[in-house]
Image (tube, rainbow, N blue to C red; front, side, top):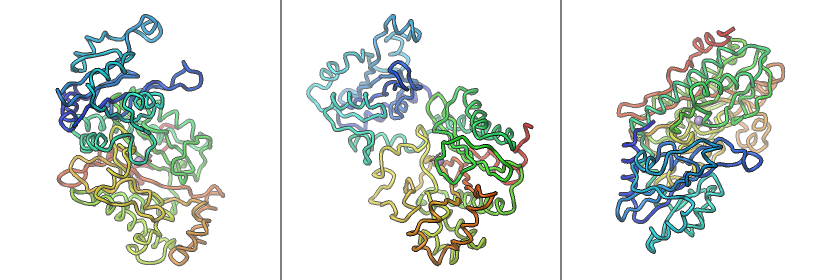
Amino acid sequence: MPSPAFHQQRRAAFLRSLDGPVLLFAGGQRSRNYPANYLPFRADSNFLYFFDSPEPDAAAFFDPADGTVRLFLHERTTADALWHGATPPFETEKTRHRVDEVLAVERLEDEVRRLAKGRSVRSLAVADHRTTLRARSVTGEALDFDAADGPGDARVCDAIFALRKLKQSEELEQVRRAAAITREAHLAAMRHTRAGSSEQELVGVVEGTFAHHGSVPAYGTILSVRGEVLHNNHHGNPLRDGDLVLLDAGAEVASGYCADVTRVWPVSGKFTAEQGEVYDIVLRAELAAIAAVKPGVRYRDVHLTSARVVADGLVQMGLLRGRPDTLAESGAHAVFFPHGVGHQLGLDVHDMESFGDRVHYPGGRKRSEQFGTGYLRMDRDLEVGLLFTIEPGIYFVPAILTDATLRERFHDSVDWQRAERFVAANAGRGFGGIRIEDDVLCTTSGAEVLTAAIPKDRAAVEKAVGAAR
Ligand code: GLY
Ligand code: MN
């Protein structure tokens, strides 16, 4: 867990950047079906950044006028102690969190009115809509968690972004822990793979490994023989020889920090020649993108580096025609690599994605209007301490390969008939998709791959598959 001093320093830095009071919310428990049956509680990341293990419905009032932070928590009741266990008294929480005061969240509206002393108070929307409604009613702002330009006032979002953007050593320690658990889960899934088993069985291995270490999936585990469905959370398929398993899964540790890793392996334990060829192109694209990482480099150029390597490999396979740099520039590579090379990582698996393109495409940069490259989730200049994923892929997506507009646009640069054969491959189940993803820290000398210990060269992957049999 990051230390109490870390949280205190972050709050002090936040206070220094504010010109008026801010009220942040952890969010509350959300029901799964009937009201008292809750989903596991997960505090809002902006709150988690400032407080260790916050309680549901916690709120914090930051006052830059006198540099104070007040924490709001539920009153301690006998009924809560009976059903959920006793929680420490306010005095203990005040000491643990090193805040100026702990107040009852039951009186939040009155207390905030008193503390604001006529000043306007700003807040941020959170995923829990009930809490967002409360934030709206307290501050009078039109807060919307789904707003494309962020969950609240741009100055508040920018102040938090400036703090969360570059990862400190205590945060990296948490990500390294998440990466170690993620490594164990990926290796366990590789080792337990055998024809006749199922996607669901391997999901159990992955998520069981996370649980064993007190962590949770940072996002819905993607484990599929249909790897061409980018965010495939369906786990109903059997595993058959000839299939590729794509696993995109990352552990989130108790502090909220996470990893995000993708590996692909053959159910049989041996890549076919064609699978191996495509795999090696993706791996070359990933390694080239990682090699391109250094301070000052534009992330879009890292993306284009991987796109050019993908294009080059696909030209050699006869799937694309033309010069790799021209193909990547025109977006033809996106017929097979239809997403961006990655995203920031931290407390959110897509870190601070809810803050929108104002922070992820700074200085008037705009998203590409091209199919594929338009999905690139950020285009910042890399800085020491920026943490992000590198995750190129090659997919044979029936919907793309039959798309009339794309077929017309890239009529000459794609061998469509050859591509269609990949959809019919593997006894009609299709080739699927291959993505290789690591978590990368920009350092003074280039890149540090925090997830490097998870096997990814073909021989190491093949060696791990089925080893638990
Ligand atoms: N791990 C899923 C994604 O990056 O979108
Ligand atoms: Mn990712």
